[in-house]
Each structure stands twice: as structure tokens, then as C-alpha cells.
Figure 1 (spheres, rainbow, N blue to C red):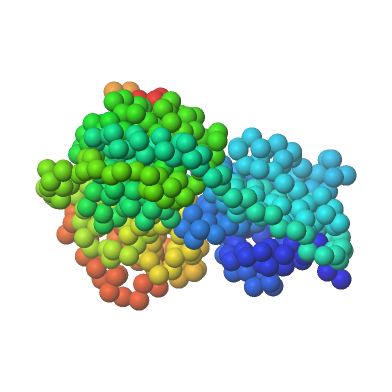
Figure 2: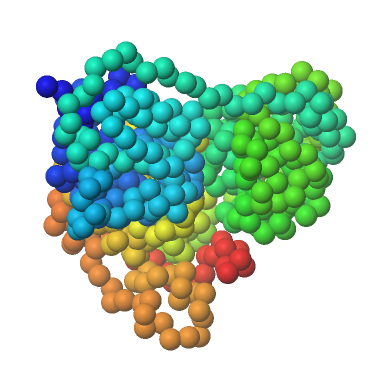
Amino acid sequence: MTTVAEQVGALLAELGVGHAVGVVGSGNFHVTNALRAAGVAYTAARHEGGAATMADAYARTSGEVGVLTVHQGPGLTNAITGITEAAKSRTPLLVLAADTPGAQVRNNFRIDQDALVRSVGAVPERVHSPASAAADVVRAYGICRDQRRTVVLNLPLDVQAAPAVDGPAPARTTWGPPTPDADSVVELAALLDEAERPVFVAGRGARGARADLEALADRSGALLATSAVAHGLFTGSPWSLGISGGFSTPLAAELIGDADLIVAWGASLTAWTTRHGELTAQATLVQVDDTAEALGATRPVALGLLGDVATTARDVLTVVDGQEGYRSEEIADRLRAAPTAPEEVVGDRIDPRVLSVALDGLLPPERTVGVDSGNFMGHPSSCLRVPDEAGFLLTQGFQSVGLGLATTIGAALARPDRLPVAACGDGGFLMGISELETAVRLGLGLVVVVYDDAGYGAEFHHFAGEDHGTVRFPDVDLAAIARGYGCDAAVVRSTADLGIVGTWLAGPRDRPLVVDAKVTADEPSWWLAEAFKGH
């Protein structure tokens, strides 16, 4: 007899699921083993929060639907921060969450899982009965894959245990982005032809559309920038400004701020990307997105185009006349000029930018960088170069601390051909440290850089002059803790201490390397002042 739990696992494998992550309890034991029996690779995490973040990062990096499997009740609540991050980031993540039987109203595990899921912006779905199970699974998977939504598929235990109902495979429906309106395409082309200083800002929705955007930018003379989450999209382009917003270089901020036309391609123009509107104040704003609700949602726009980024760019290219735009020799020279590296002052602690620049020169270019949240985060984001948009993961949709390590593990599962690099603060590293065992158990060649300022830097810098007893902590030998997990590790106080990185890179890379970098904490990062403007 095939149960519904076994049917669900087999059907998801047939639909194309390639990897699942989770923590197994009694409620999701059978469906998880059904996935494994059907050939789906499975990674066991140590905490549901870490598992959710790994599955989120796997989906972002691979471009596939990520799958998370959790126990009912506390299994789901433990995972909810990671699920919220995925939902706010429009990650195609499918959560298989066990649920209590409908009749057991006094079950200790019972909560209103649908209401919880809906409250964080994810889509609640349910396997209602054995007769509807196949259709329920196909529907939930389709919403994930085609609409880039995080879906929690609740699996009541009594339905899971019931015999599966044989029948024809349910019809699979697909959703495609709308076709851009022809008149709007012509209007955008006219704006590009009139602009003297156009800038393209590409966001998460532009991932995979580099060739089309560059072709249009070349014709219209636009400079290229990205939102933070799309960092790496234009790596190698001589006209790339890097990140727009809080992580902008001074030159990027100047050139974006002087633009007379800014076209956001799959970017939501948040306060972070626009520096609370400062970077877009002088420009005509255009937004291209495949979701109607996104157009003008965070910043008033002169023109909103509903359509897929790549398709819209190709359509505009056919009608734009073309011009030099922003691409002068003077601008080219300024973009070619290498930024000045900071000078190291040797002492008890290392400057975080000095550390980041040194690591960028030591680590191989084929890398995936996952960045946690904290006062340090601007340094690895701006200094550690990545090969493309799949090489950078910034989990800031919900702005939770503690997701960096698990994020990078999930990315490593998706791209084992690249060196995974996790950049964490000491606070975030300790929050997610249980997953260090996961990395060791998997034999991941993972570099974890802890920007260790012995406290919650964002808070003690923001609340200057006040009592910091709640946000400063005694110095901890995080390298010793990491060695206890089975990692290679070292404390770093200057670039001279980074020799362990080269030694580790030359070795088998069969275990993580943890760099406990004791960084200076004299002043807030430049991005922090920008971020707190909205607080």
C-alpha cells in the first residue's frame, strides 16, 4: 500500500525537485524518507531555522525550487524567520510542514499554521485529502516555480497516513510574465533617446537577463548598477557602477545621483537602494517588473512597464535610436581607476576593510559569498568580488541577524564548484553556530570569516554615548570553539595572521576554515548611518 506521504515525495521528485533540507521529527519522517527514496538529495540540518535558510539559499543560487521539510507546530515555528526571509525575497521555496489531524484540537503541537504562514507573507496551501493530494502538490509546486513565491504545504498526519488514491496525473499549469505594452515600450525608448545621463539599476528580477540589459545599455549609453541582492550581475563590464544604495562607492553614488533617467529593471527601488530617495531625486524614474503591485510601490515612477525584464529590454532595443548617453571617456577613466586600498595600522585589532581587501586577494575568484547582518556587512559586500549574480547572497529581506552561515551552506550545496565564503559578525555567527556541525559533517570546504567586534556593533554605534552593557560582550576565542566542531581555525589580528588561509587553500579543503578576525570597532560603517536614517 502506498500512503499519501509516499505519494507526495514521489510526485515532487517527478516534478523536478533536486534537493531538500530539513530537520526530521515524527510528523515529517515518512514524507522526508519518501523524497529520499525517490532520489531527491537530502541534507539534515541541526535547527529548523538553519534548514529554512539553507533551502532559501539553495533556491536563490541554483534557480530551482528549494524544498524544506519540518515537523508540525514547533518545527514550523523554529523555521519561521528563515521562511519570512524567503517570502519577503520572493524565493521559490516549498515548505513541507506536517500538521496535526483536524480532530485533535487539544494536541500540544496544534497551532493555526495557515494563519502563521500568511502573517509572514508566505502562501499557505494544504493537502486536503487522499483524493486531492496529487492536485494539491502540483498546485503548490506550480505557485513556487512559476510565481516565485514561498509556499507552505501543510500535511495533516491523518491524511499523510491514509492510502493514496490512484488516478491520472493532474494537469500541470504554468504562469508566464505578462507581455510589455507596445505603447509603453515606445515611451521608454523615447525617454532613453532623450536622456543625457541614463542609469540602469537591475534587481533580483533581472537575474539571468544580463545580455539583454547590456545590449540595450550599449545602445542607449546607460551606466549599469544593481540593487544589493543582484550584486555581481554586471561583473566585468567597464560601465558597471556596482551596487546602488547603502553599499555604493562614493563614485557610484555621485554618478547615480547625477542621472537624469533611472530605469529599475526588476528592482523595487527601496529606501536602501535609493538612499531614501537621495540618489533618485533628480532623475525621471521608470520601473519594469513582472508584478503589477511592485510598480510604484516604494517610489513614485513616471512610467511603469509590466513585463519580464529580458523580454522588455529586447522589445525596447528594437525601437530605441541610440546615443552616447552617459558613456564619455572621462567617465570611463574614472571607472577604470582602482580604488585606493586602506593602509594597515598594526595593533591588537584589524581594520575590517583592510581585512576584506586582503581576503579578496587571497581567495580564488570563483566564489560564492554569503553575508550576514551587522555593522560589518558593508565591507565584505563591497570588497569581496563575485563572478556573477549567483555568487552573492545577502539575506536582508527581513534584516534578521544570524542567517549568514546557513545561507552559505545552502549556496555550497547548489554550487559545489565554487568556494563558499561566509561573512558573519560575532553575534550572527554565534546565533547560527549549530550549523557549523552540518558543514563539518558534510565535509564542506567553506571559509567562515567572523568580523568579531565583541558585541552588536550596529547597536553600540547607533546609541553612542549611552549604556552599552546589553550589547557589548567579553572577547571569546571563537577559533577554539570552531576547532571543537572539527574546523581548521585561527585568530586574526593583522594581515600577517592570514597565512592560514593560503595553507588551507593549498590543502584538501575537506573541512571548514573559521577566521576569527578581531576587528576594530572605533566607528560605525558608512552604510550604517544610511540604514538608520529610516529608523
